[in-house]
Image (cartoon, rainbow over all chains, first blue to last red; front, side, top):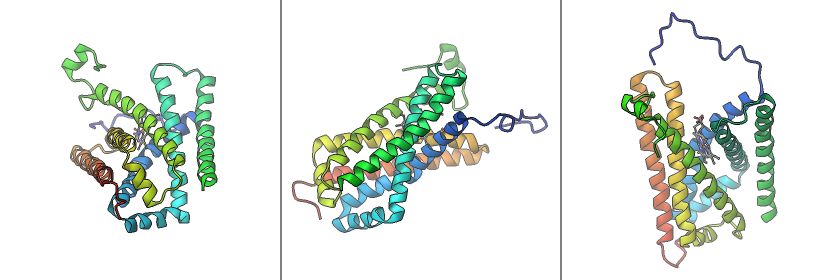
Length: 130
Length: 131
Ligand code: HEM
């Protein structure tokens, strides 16, 4: 990028009053990046371990069943739900809908509520299934 | 599907010169990724457990292995497009930008290839549980 530093930038990051849509926008990037790095690595590890041997798989499960494995698992599943709900919201915004202040705020908050609800539901099913 | 106007195409507008296609593929792959991950979660929850035998036996079925291969293609494609946008937003120096995008391409293809091979190895592993 070739920006002339003597030209002032408008103070776009500092003049806005905080709202849930800003948090959701940032979370879309944070969760996407987290899933794409940590999530993808864990997923590939799981598959390669399963294809390698029972021992390699047991090694993976040792970590996954550990407290930090569960923390990462809960975190990744929450990230997936948050990213997906906010991705669906993206489709609506891409069509040019949902920019009215009240509507925009409502659906921003709903992605946050929804992702926590879906994470809780998923882990309820996982724990209940065992 | 081309989402640019003929004039925009001729001029090669957009920072990456292929912005509209990138944008469209990011949407397309996000829908397929969503559908495939719903399938994946439901499938795993329906398995009696996640031990080695159960998982490898599940992956030997074509109706598990093929959607898994599609899931890998869809997810890695989507995340490669996504991370490239993140890189282009924060890495401004042309040299390091080129290097980062190159590295991203190598790493995503390597990751997807590993996952692909693992699924195929299990799927083609025959009837005996591979120990
Ligand atoms: C595990 C699977 C997924 C991974 C690893 C992933 C990763 C990413 C990454 C790294 C980005 C770039 C973020 C940014 O530019 O701020 C992104 C963008 C995006 N993702 Fe995903 N994603 C996944 C699943 C999904 C799903 C299921 C949906 C839709 C329901 C979705 C919808 C989107 C959309 C619409 C964008 C573009 C956002 C924009 O243009 O600003 N993603 N994703």
